Length: 134
Image (cartoon, rainbow, N blue to C red; front, side):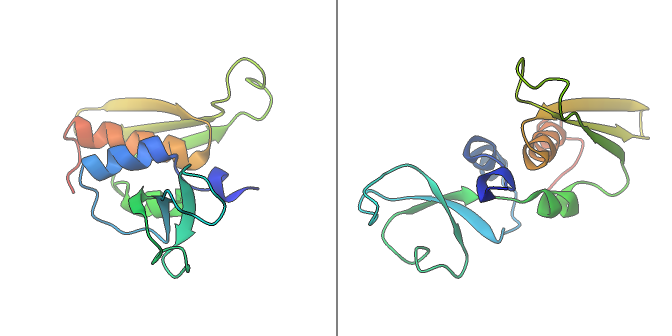
């Protein structure tokens, strides 16, 4: 499995940053113009990588599914499911995440291409609706 499949996407990572998620991740999305490989595409680095201190800009924390699991509220009853073949060609989003909170007997449902993306989308939803705070 590629590292990019184990962390939330750059787009979701940037949204979590905008929502001021303070927790640092082990991985970060980074971009720089003068990278040795000659690309300006965002790429992943670890906090102790030699690329971390190179020129360029840290875009956002690239949270893993486990890190997002630590951030998501513990008092919500959550469930998730992976659909390996049901949406194979029609839609890439195979991870389903459902979150219940007992305060008002309501629930939210999100889908993601990866488990990390689904968890990130759930956290974004909860923060935007002000159902949890950071």
